[in-house]
Amino acid sequence: MRGIALISLSLSLALPVTAHADCEADFSVNDFIGAMNKADNALEEFDLDLYRNVLDLTYGKLPCTPDRLHPNHLIRFARMNALAAFFDQDEFTVERWSSIAGATTDFPWPESFDEDHPLRATLADYPPGEPTGPDDAHLYPPRNGGVLVNGWLALKPKAPPDTPNFVQVIDSDGLVVDSFWMEGPNFPEKLLRGDDGNLKEPSWWSAPDMSLNPAVDVKIDPAEIARREKAAKERQAEKEREEARLRALQESAAKAAEKQRKRQERIAKREARKAERRRRRAERRGEIEITEGAPLPPPETWVSIDVDKTEAFTGLLALETEELDIECNDLLSLEPKALLGRLTEVEVACLERSLRHARRQVERDKISRVLVADAWAKGKMHRWEAAMRRHLNDIDRSDADLCYIFARFLAEQGPDRASETIRWSEIALANKERWAGDLRTERVYALLRLRAIAAQKRWYQAERHFLDDPTKSRQALAGRWRSRTKTLAREWLDYANHSEVNMDGSLAFQICFSAAGTQDFCDYRRPDVAALNEDDE
Image (cartoon, rainbow, N blue to C red):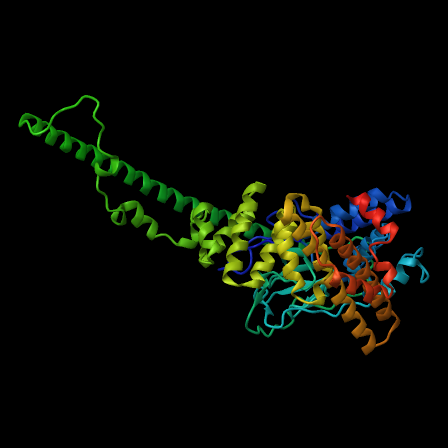
């Protein structure tokens, strides 16, 4: 599954100590080039299955690269993905990759892709998307570092919309500390802050040479390799020191707890002996009657301990809370707090660390849901969207309810999110079997409505852009969204008119009619439409 590797990190640190925590091995730039060359060889032999498999595997491994990637490498990779979608006649996926694949570069197309090649003609119809992003946030890279988007330095949190963008976070030494795929301009919260950082170009940055051939291996300076190895060793040593410090703290806490347990045992035995002596004295005075098998008093009456004054508790108070790894293990107790938005920043940071290191899918799912609930309850929509996107892309997209909620959220963000709204609506529809009865009918109707209205808004936007600047490419884009609108509205109308529960199809008909321009296309009573619905049933 293609996912966006949004590696969360401690809120108190803002950036991870080590990069690529989820990678088993590095995937170098030359590994990347070799994979693309392998895909090209498969294409020459017209082995399309191998071609697609190599691209999919490369997409997943690319966040594990320790190298700064050149724009031409990513342009070449985008062209290859667009070609794979072109073979599949998947027009929308071709459009998703077009902003990168159609970027300006001095590196020429292969000889077999002349100017009349259908793929190049198709890409020419898609104008590069204007970079967009949040207006109330600013990039927050490491000190004297930077953020690269598709190989270019970004000084503002802006990126082409409706396309997969490759992001790399670079430190002050020019070393990669994090890499991930990002959908559109959805920068993770860890790279954003509210105040203007007044970012400047770091000293290690220089404009890339756009004549670089991305099919030829890159020669890396041995001094650069040595510098990376030294930095990697320092990061590993820091990690080991941190782990050793945590072990020492945990051992200290465990010893304090064991000491307190033994103290409680001694007190309990002493109190039990006192109670036994009192009982015997009372028996000798005839004050109580001894009954065989009489129940003992409840354990809480045997001892009386002021927990606030125990050595174990005092020892824990002396520790730095952020350094303990045991504060967020009890998800059952944290879940109610998350639903009320009352998790502290320390608890959120702890959960983020736990999620990053969790190996079992069930554990990752539970932790992620707690973080999603807390962000929603606090109204922190940037954090909630990033947490939800990470959950659905990296952990579990089979939850129809979450896909439905996310699709509704995206639909409210305007026409720029139309493609994503349609995508997550369709994923929710693919899992509709998880619903039953009236709930299923209502949710399917709502999702079909979301898709059609999102497509209509995007069509209207494309029409306005065409009227402002009547170019051929903008006219083609408006035409594609108009066609998409009428198709989705027709599907919504058919469902409304043929569902077991009578549902209003008037708006669906209006949208369908406005996009199709003819009533015949939208008339559900046509014989071929009726037969289609009977087959679906």
